[in-house]
Length: 480
Image (cartoon, rainbow, N blue to C red; front, side, top):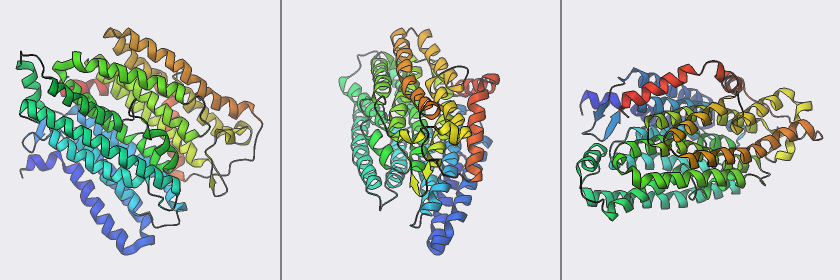
């Protein structure tokens, strides 16, 4: 194993080895290990981020082309690490309240995060499948982590069964692509597609579609979204905060790399599929949330809609569209973490509150909390000058410049519909009769995270250039 190979996967190696050491530490100290394991896991995530930044941004390959690293992948990995660190910080409130020993939870975050980072680096279907399974196995356990809770166990079981089905379909698609091309390497596939002058075999296209189906499940895009509302409602809120950000970032980045590298020459074949999935996700996300009374189910449909908006950028098939997706994912991560921090705070005594009617009169009992949630909801609705408006603006602009006007119109119309259920929460907080005050508390680290999210969402319009320039460099370094 050469030094180049080791350097390119050093962040993932550190996270995996750190997880193994923390597992032994936790097994020895048991209940006393939780706080130490949480702190060490957070430090490992920060150190992994430092190592990612230290790697060269030029395109590099490891393990005979199985893995790739460049500026685009660097940005994606940093985004994954930031989202994982934020989700870990938010979970501190939840883990303190659990009656069972839960030192394994930070370890599961490290293992799944390592798998998702390898997923973004994958340059071959073999490494892709191994990475996606490493991440998925950890995610299944996290969904059912509260094993004494029937809803959590049910969420984990649903996620596992449907996830296994999606993985099987993806693997079958990969085997078809290998059967018709004789290779699983992304670079070789890209060269074959450029040199080939014969009609595309239907078997190859079938494999392409099946691979897209598997990834669409991972990002909960329509029509493979069925698991999302049930898993979001049943899984612990801290776990849902992780699900809503980290796996989606990794899967959308992977989808972008697949469409722009090995499948770039087949844009006429995959573009209609992405357009359909994008429009369907926006419609289901907008209308599915209208009658939801559980705030976690409402956010599940919201996340489906946001995936549709992100896919708008990928459907463009241009470098500008890919840059828009990176900007969208960055802003969406901040909005989601902020919103789930608020849901974690929603408690009355020892009972978590998930019904939106519990927000009635919040502006009179907790004015700062109401202002914060209102800010997040306005941003998710895409109302200027908040960050959520610019996130949608960049992907819609890329789609419009690519001539996908139907997609842009669908996005604008569904944004108007979605604004209704976001603003309904604001109306309940400010105009309905107040209920018993919410008595939840957040730890200091979680409060600082909330402040950071609020500042980014509210003041993004004053300094949009750093994110725009960074994403532009990331796409340029990757050669898209």
